Length: 195
Image (tube, rainbow, N blue to C red; front, side):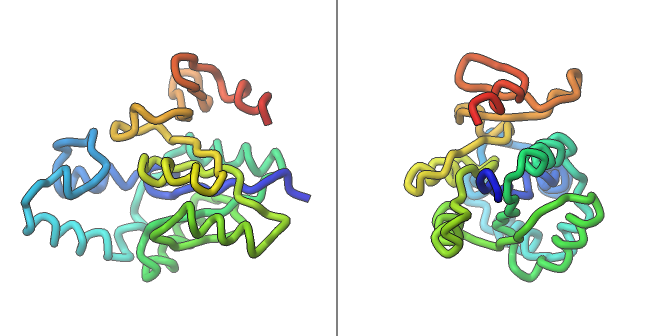
């Protein structure tokens, strides 16, 4: 029996979408998650971005975020049911599965959604023994919605979510995932003590 369910976002947590995006559109206003806010009033760029995001081939070539993958594997080792929940277009499913397989990322279910917290809650209700307890994501808006569904948010640290807690990230120097609950930063082992 599983201890619980954890859902991981792909882009920004497991795959480095931002690097490819910045190489294509520039790195201005990276502190803003919402692309309309990054490029205010630029309808031409907005159209190009929508076309860019809709291209299923884009997703296969993304570099992995090794720390995110290591963190996901820690949940597997601790007997969690792992769901990959992504806002990618459904047309990218084949490329997404190939990408996940190419980096040996273990998961039990892949979900394409535009309303993560609500849809994950629905999955929990349909599988009554598998309530989604944790969501690891980089999108502050999605993480805020978790409270409405009693899902514990864990923010994968990025420039655009610096004020969201609790957060986790890969410390390249320490070669481990770090955990921050407001002002206190600890190795992830402190997080696991609470579980």
